[in-house]
Image 1: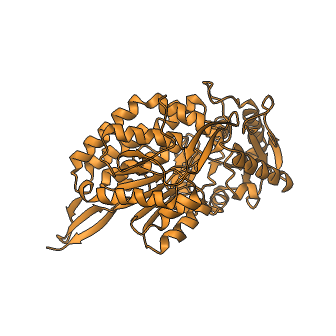
Image 2: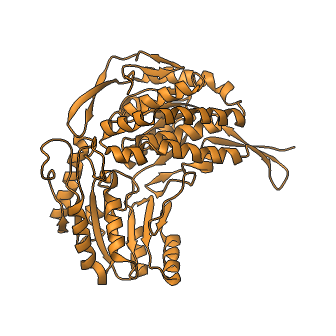
Image 3: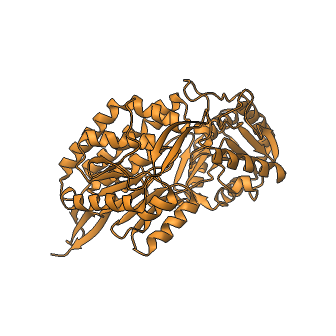
Length: 479
């Protein structure tokens, strides 16, 4: 991997010295050792990046769809040539096992780009409505992106690529925990020929750089992915300038197992999915809802799967899970496991502390709780670790009630039987659940489909045509 310019920011097509002098350690979560230092930005750095984006907007916003498609094709080619570097960067900075980085964490940088390209090819920036008025979709302007650490390139690509497709210019602040993949992405965009000032990168923390982006009068839109708490603060900071704010926030997704599904298969798949990425996914199926008649059997299966879950170093290939991203995240997960125990949930598997054989690194024991009621903290709060809660329900109506009894509404999962009647039951449930994405029988949404949620899970949708639309203003011209 090439040596990244972590003491610089990418502003106006050049790698420039920050205006402040603060540096921050980047820690490998598997070893707890510092492996890099990165510059931390100030409000003045944000001003410089915004000025560059503002200067670039008049020309880039007038580029044609064909020109932007050519640019995206160039980005894809360069990204593919540096794919292994991206995978390695994500593994080192956030602890994703290298096999997961290869097949998912880095892969989404290609998948989301392809989804946006397909949408852009069909997107009509101008059309006549039924009354004959001309409807025009125009780029909204300068955009500010604040992205998280758990799927770093996933969220960068879901913001940068559709914004470029719409003709916007932008400034990115990645998570300070996972800056390496963002620096590499900036190099990719530079090599691909993104015009100077169109994309700008300023590293830093939320209270400084994030706040400066959120409140900046020249930024027309802020797109944020992260915690609900931070999303609320960003919305408040943006309110005085009446800028558009899109948010992709937390989740506490239910996984409903119908009484006639294949329980062994459904429970195994649900537990493994919950633990994927060490549980650090906003759409993870963290609440498993089981019919009362199958509850004990389901807990036995979940215990077996949890205890068989392998834990290993991120650098090693395989299907194991890695560490949590930071000491802060490890402490939070431990505190919520403790809360589950204190609230009277049954500890089916796992528990407090590191797994056997690990005396350093932010590794956490894969944990399953039974006898959980939906009012417990572990059933209502997003743990963001390998922790599954199992809740019993009485009938379909009760399952939907429990599924919706959450402040979140990002995703939901339903496992049906093979019969048409059971699948129809599952589809009816999907319509009744208040969530932005519902997955039936292990399915996943495709690249280009809308990603986002209801309630405290945010607003706006990312991906494909909906992602492009988020970065557009709509103008009507009557003729």
